[in-house]
Length: 214
Image 1 (cartoon, one colour):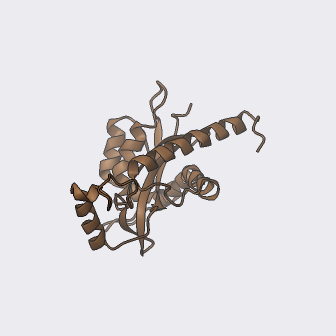
Image 2 (image 1 turned 90 degrees about the vertical axis):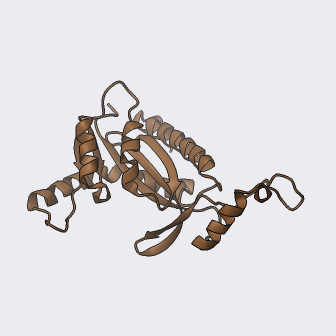
Image 3 (image 1 turned 60 degrees about the vertical axis):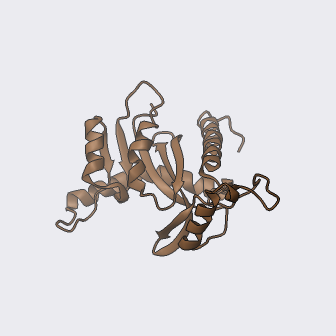
């Protein structure tokens, strides 16, 4: 059953265009949103436009310009169940609900959602509880309380399950060039994600059936 457990995570994806400052990006967006901004020097509709939908965030305290892929993976078999793209600055937690809802591909309800500490917080726990989904979100220290030994051990157990979504990210980084966006719009990059998702799942299914040659 692919709904028994779902691991959710997000990764940063470099923009297809070179980085520009936030101020320059705003100027380019404002210009693009005018009738003149959509035309080339000859007055014809532009065939190419730089990526204006990426934005800035921090990756381990270093500035990063690009997009973010949010994904969920079946923890039993490793199938990708849902994936989408947003600007890089969008908080991971905003898409836990999206990934959970779009991970259901059978009549069976999703039983449990696994996620790292970045998704911790009462709103997400409440969302899972309301939908009768078991909580597999790792806990983190708060300003008022440190993790108990029981919570630390719980986190370790969850990390051994949710690694499978990181495995998908790693494989697609190595073999599909997924570290960098191929297109300059989110819509096209979403389509690219869904195509890669389909190819990945076909390959995974063949390996599970032991008929894959590679």
